[in-house]
Length: 160
Image (cartoon, rainbow, N blue to C red):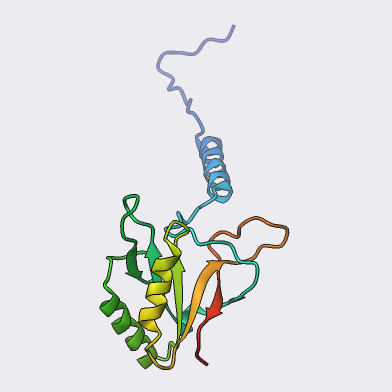
């Protein structure tokens, strides 16, 4: 047997390079296989007909589901994030949108919001001249099912 002398320094070490490579490969795999869901705030009904509406030329109002059963739905300016607003504030947002060239108003209402509340909102906006009101629905997905995070609109009422 070969013996080493005690004064000879050992040159033993663990090469961590393959371990780091494996960790980075696992991280890359997890990153690309992760499915990110938007956590939809509004569960709009699916469409059977309708066309997409550009968000850049639209003012979006959202009717969120009531926090309690039988409660009032919350009107929110935008895509469902933010503080609740009043009908007067909604009219001001639409008027500001007209001034900025956004003549389309998309109303997104959660599936649990009563139809009468949507009609009441449309009625309060109907006296504003020069707008087209659209109802936000989930985009039609051929073969059935729901297309996540994709909203189309169905035109209602009068307007250009």
